[in-house]
Length: 175
Length: 274
Image (cartoon, rainbow over all chains, first blue to last red; front, top):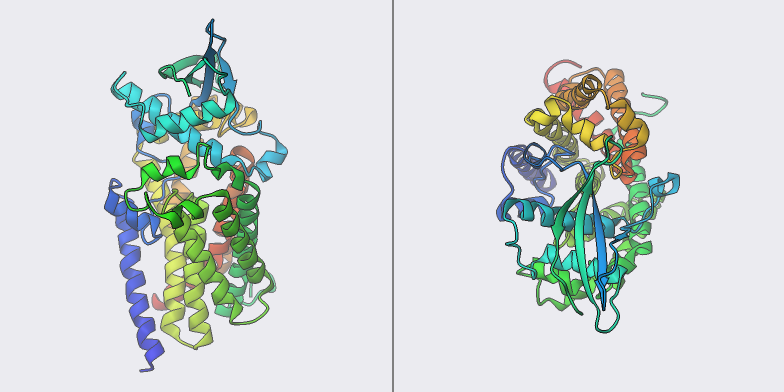
């Protein structure tokens, strides 16, 4: 047998093993170890809108919005922070800022979920909190002496009646 | 022959690499254009992101890689590798381009979760590299390894997503498609109107999860039928582009389809169905 063929059979064996691992990955809960396989691309979990959280969370398909307000002498009105351009034909094909919207959206989802599970227990130095706070500061940078507060609200989208629910309210922050 | 295209490993590799190249140029250009999102004082900046990683927290290399410069360079590499895969100027250029794509993808995945399109594109790149060795060295086991890897990943991807939906009560009763297609983020007014009726939403849910779940059996079908099934799945992905703006997905998935064709031919030969 040629060396290259021997290596090929070995590679085929590894491929079969990795595929078996990949099949198993569909049935397991992701842990740091299984996440490592996922990140290396060896055994990925494929869901495509089939995440477990769908059965556990009532608002999972609602749109999350980031709201910001500032306070100086008076508390200002809530302002919605756009996390990307409004959807249109062009954004369907080309939206390079999508990563920002996706990651901040993900952080907002984590904040809202954590608040639902254990209200008022979220540490303001956790990554999702800091991510959303940073996005809020970017959108509405407070002037000197002012403080900023952000909120995450969910909306039922195209569904009628359209309802808006407060999911998370931050503390006041001064940069 | 299908549509004037010979179904040989070399032809399938070439077709897959062209599609992977198009995907790569597209996402590379997107990375390059959107590299400002990784500025140090932004929500995606390394000073914040480093908190998520125990190992990379103090790495200066990681700090550069996940800065606008690093992301921009990775975008450029993706574009150049993609252009090489489309043009296929020399036999040796193909594995170099594939290797570059794999390195970029693994580097990115070390810090940020890859989306489905990126994961599948990586599987295509790895499978294509193995198939290239098989063709270049005339080695059947390498050709089988490459075919099995990418073809197997696509089969697991569809089957896994069908299975995960089947296990969810809200997919079985139609609440999940109703919710997803009614939101502003992942739906449109037209799709919201379509799934407004619970019976239609439930039927749509099953129309999505059943074909995904049964996709592995498509490998046993005669070639023209398999191609028809793959075209239906591609059509579904294109509808998703319109509904959810996931434009890069169908290209990455289409790049894996030639491997499914090769896997099906091999499987049918083994089972004596050819």
